[in-house]
Amino acid sequence: MRTVALVVLLSASCFAQSIRVRVVNDENGHPLPKQAVYVQFIYDSPARAEPKLQSETDSNGEAEFNIPPLISIPRRIWVTVALDSQRWHCNCTLASDTESVLQNGAVRQTRKSKTPARASPGVIVFYARPFTLLDKIMWAIFRGEL
Image 1 (cartoon, one colour):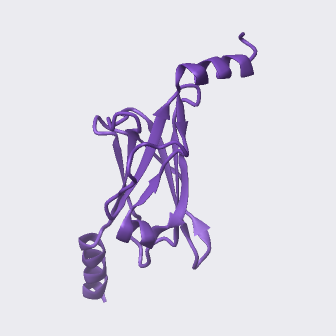
Image 2: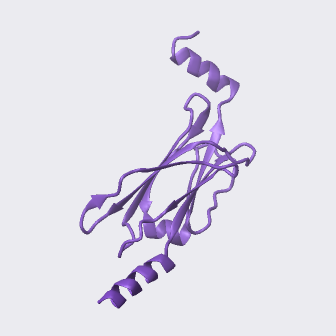
Image 3: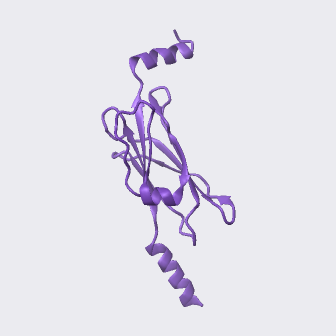
C-alpha cells in the first residue's frame, strides 16, 4: 500500500503543470512588471474552488502559478490582473477552461488593440493600452476634477 501511495505522489509531481500570466503594454510590446495577478482554480467534482492565489509580475511582465497537484486538473480558471484603472485600458479578467489554456493559451486585448493576438500553450497574455491625453482629460472630468 505504501508503494502505491509513493508511486501516486511521484507521478503527480512529475506531471506538475503551471500557468503563466503575462502582462504587456499594447502600444510598445514592453512587459509590465510589478502588477498584481490573482488566480483561482475551480473544480467540478466535487464542486469547490481553491483559495485565490496572488503574485506579482516580474521584470518580464510574467507571474507563474502552479496547478494544485490533485488527481484531476481544475475544470476552470479565473484570472484577474489589477492594473491602475486611471492609467490603463485593459480587459483584465479571464474565465476559461483550464485544459484549453494549457493546450492553446489565451489572450485578452482591448477593443483598440494594435498587437496581433497570440499566446503559447499554458500562457495567458493580457494586453493593456495606456491612457491617451484625451483619456486622462475625460477621466478627470468624470471624477469632477475639471
